[in-house]
Length: 60
Image (cartoon, helix red, strand yellow):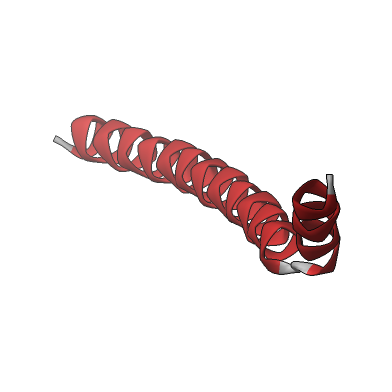
């Protein structure tokens, strides 16, 4: 029983688990932001290419 209490106390005092959870949440937020940025930039570039193609086709 004493060993269990010692292990429980060490687990309570250990902050590595909390830091890992914080970094995991931060990584998730960064991942979502990067994916959203790529999607938005991709849509913008696609619109620019469509406009350029339309302009070049009309001028030809």
